[in-house]
Length: 579
Image 1: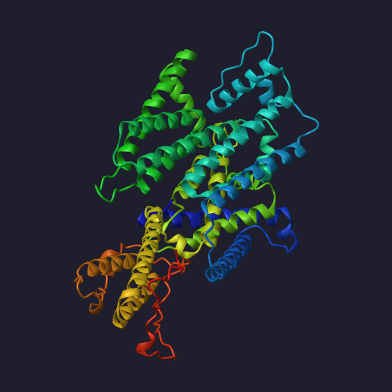
Image 2: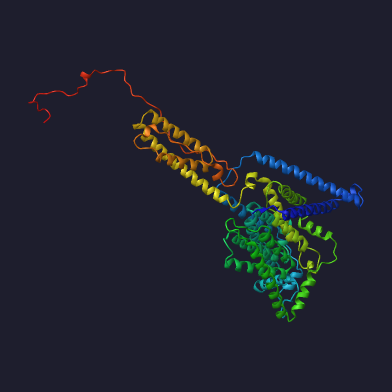
């Protein structure tokens, strides 16, 4: 999915560059401090360290730029091999199954032998005469109720909760895979799924009690719902009643996610990105369907929040203002230091330099690939997701209930995947129009079939003319065959127009003297007939063409006299040997 480059997309690109520099500098500082780099070289805190970190960041960007240019240069010299759709689907399916199986085996290998109780287990444990205490944080309360229901079925077993964690995380990963594949492509979706399966932080989160995995599952469901609604609205000829219902349900679901945690705001920002930044304008009617869809989502969010607050007030016996006040108190920014965000992100990287280098290399590739395409880009949605995730991940009262940096981390992973695939794809693929790709393929196939039929008809005509026409007629057939050869080498649209002109010219030839008329060949108006699409390179026609006629003359060296040309033998009248 691509976006047209506008002033807003350029602002987003500048913001992504600033955020990448800021986070890269902070992560470099944490790694250098961890490995005692500053102490070894006696670099005192202050401006000297900042200059040192700036130098490291510039070097990283320079090396990644050189690597990006080398990859683009090598990619330009490699001829692309187009695989059949079935082969691509089979490869993607094998990768998907392999990643899921690898993630399961890794978690089985890392499963802790000794499980220790924690606060979440104590809140959800089944105790005689004790109910689950109502909690102000919505995501934590729903997570506690889910654990409590599980413990009612199997008992207070720590291992059961860990297995539930793994199941929730895998379901969330699959939903996010579906959403990312629909909006960013198969490579980026597979890349994201690989991070879910093998990144140290995700393995750690799946083997410990945390409401993050439940919220991740619900967030992935919201992403999949958003991608599905957008694809339907985008492909429709108008705004139908089911589009109205789908966008309204999406708005209510976003309101539910905002009630559980302020991270649900990120889904609202992504809705803005899909339905407004990449608004769909129909070529024929000029109808813009993104604006009414966004308006309905806003109505759904407002109505959903009011309805959820009212239900919460009825259940708890509090007033609506009290519920809204508690929600506001949970998410008002605290006086925490700005470095808290870097330490959260550093924890997400799992204290693994390889993961950090791989992730930031893909992000810098995405920054450079912004200039590969002339009028399109494919990262605005994920930049919005990352920026809004960072903005909502501030320090607040709810930060103690759930680590809220995973949405920004997920956006960074998707951005890295988009950067890598943009570096590996050819320029022709990057510039390919999305709406005309399927149409071009179908028109090409139809043109090839028409050319094959014309070749067969030309062969039959040539064989007929060979037996009855003169030398001039034979030369005319050879000219027609040569013209057919040239048709195969030009553009398929020109070949089709050329064949039509041949048929019309043959129909105008008088029947009494076909041997003296030559078939006129008209040049097809290529500029008028070709649509404004990219130039396509076609392979040579593998089918055999009619053989060119070779003139043959009958002649014998022995000449027979006329008196010897009588083959009848005279017999007498009474000779009846044949009776």
